[in-house]
Structure formats: C-alpha cells, structure tokens
Length: 418
Image 1 (cartoon, rainbow, N blue to C red):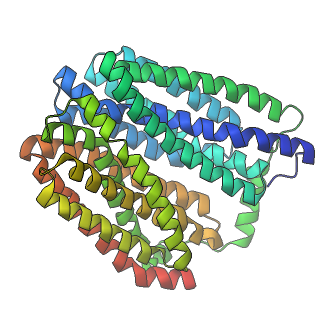
Image 2: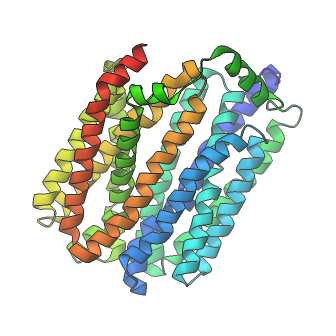
Image 3: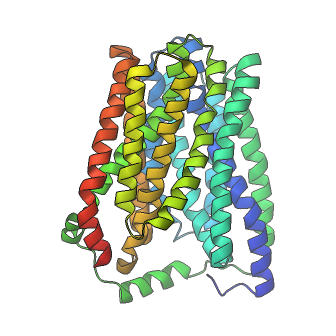
C-alpha cells in the first residue's frame, strides 16, 4: 500500500474507489458480454451461420487474453486511472459502432478491438485498489467487484430478453450498454479528480516494487516450471476456459434450436448460468478453506463434477429444456470453481520468485485461449454434426481437464512445499 497519501486523503480515495471500481467492472461486463448474449438473436434475424456469428467473440477473446499481459505491463508504467479512462472510453465507442454496423466482417474487427480495450480495465484496477486500501478492505472490495461483474451479466440477460430484443432489435443492447458505460465513465473521471486532487500514490511505485523483487527473489527457470506440473495446469486452464465460456456463450442458441424457442425466451432462461456461477464460487470458497495448498486436487474434483454434468447432457440434453438448462448451468458453475482454484490461487504460489503479477497475466490469457477456440469450434461442430456432437465435445474436454488436474497434483504439491 502506498504511503504517499495522507491518512485523510487515503480514506477519501478508498471510499471513492470502493464504489467506483465495482461500477467499472459492471460496465466492463455490460460492454464485453453483450455480443455473446445476443448472438442467438443475430443468427436468427440475419440468417448467418453460427460459425460466422462466433468469429467476433473468438477474436475479442484472443485480443482480451493477449491484452491482459500487455496491459499488466503498461499499468506499471503509466497512471492506472488514466488507463482505465482510455479503456472505458474506447469500449463505449466500439459498442456504439457495433450497434451501427451491419456487416459481419466489420463487426469482427470492431469486437476484436473491443477485446483489447476491455483488457485495459482489470490490471490497473487491481493496482489502484492495492494503493488506496488496507488489506481487509481491499479483499472486501474485490468481492464486490466480482459480484458487480456477474450482476452486469444478469442485467444483460434480463434487459436483452425482456426489452431490447422483444420490442426492438438486438442492436439496442449495444446502445444501452454504451450509454450506461459513458455514464459510469463520467462518474469515474469526476471521482478520480477528487481522489487524486492533492497527491498521487503511483509515482515511482512500479520501479520500487521491481527493484525490491529483483533483490529478494530467485530466478524462475523453465526447468522449475516443467517439473512443477505447471504445464499440465496450463492445459487444464485452457480446457476450463473452453467449457466455461463455450457453454455460456452457446447455451441460448443451444436451447433455442433444440426446443424451438424464440431467441429472447432462450436468453431470458439462460440467466440461470451466472446465478449458479455465484453459488458455485461460494461453495468452492468453503472447500478451499478445507484444502490447504491442494488447489490442483480441488480443481480436479470440481472438474470431475463438471464431467458428470456433461455426461448427463449427452443422454438427456433433448429431453426437457429445464433439465438441459439446469445441468448446463451446473457445468458452467463447476468451471467457475475450477477457475477459482487455478486462476486465483495458483499465481500466488510464485510469490517467492517475485512473479505473481506476471504469472497471473499468463494464466488469465490461457483461460481466453480456451474460450476463443471454443466459441468458434463449438459453433462449427453444431453446424456440421449437430448439438449432440457438441455435447460430446464438452464431455471430452471435461475428461482432458480432469486428467490434467489430477496428473499435476503430485509435482505441484512438491513445488508448493519446496
């Protein structure tokens, strides 16, 4: 935490960012998840192939994943609050452009750029929270930030299905997201001006941290990474991202086509996906308290539960829309749990090498490698072979992810204990 703010100014800044940062993440999810949520409506109204409709989302996930690493580095070199302002401004403009654009190729380019704009929000936000808050409040606000993100997703499901698609067109989802984003950007700019009116906690901070890290920590070699089982964990993270976002993004289209539902009705029912994601995270948090330094084992068992859900879908996915939606939502919920173990806990194990931030960026990007591949592949498989083949692909992915986690248990345990 920075010592450059006076106690009074630090308290003022903390109070402001405790409100503003969750709002930023709410806006981030509105302007990042809106395309995937209305994808079923786009394929329905424009008659384009599902594989083509999935290209913008895949490209956005690629640029978002790569941008996590780039933005993590940039966030240590430029003022993080200014970086957030740039990213939020860009995503509001790009969402407006998405609503006005009628050509699939141009939409793919716009959404690719939006992915990078979105990557400029999370890394600098973490730095701001750490600089202005004590540890307990930092943890509390991080929880609120994640809740705000999921709330943004739920808001999109409800407003898109009940208002924009039902009474207007899918394009109004992008307009609404852009307007809300612009309003939150205004609040952010005003709040930052007040928080940093007298002092700035970020001058030379990154340089001091880097110098300290170089002096204290041993070098992390490829040999250490290989022997730790991290490569297996990396593969599990890719498979987790593929299932979490692949199922989430295609479920509205999946149930719409399987049970002949209108896209707006399918989108409304899919609101169960993020709701069960929240419940899953609560449960996994309790499990984590019971598993001391055994995140790979925890991830393996949670992945195995996801495998059970996918296997059930293979046999019953077309029997009842509510069973299909519930089991699909449970599968996504388990992947949120795996994400907690592998994406949130694993990076902290590299603290002794002074590479927590670097490994966090790499791990986050791996999630979106899986996500980007899945959006396109699942859409292409559904076109060529049908949804039964897609569900089988989900099951195979879950098998591979489960195996990777359990194979990594022994070497990772040795690495953590070493």
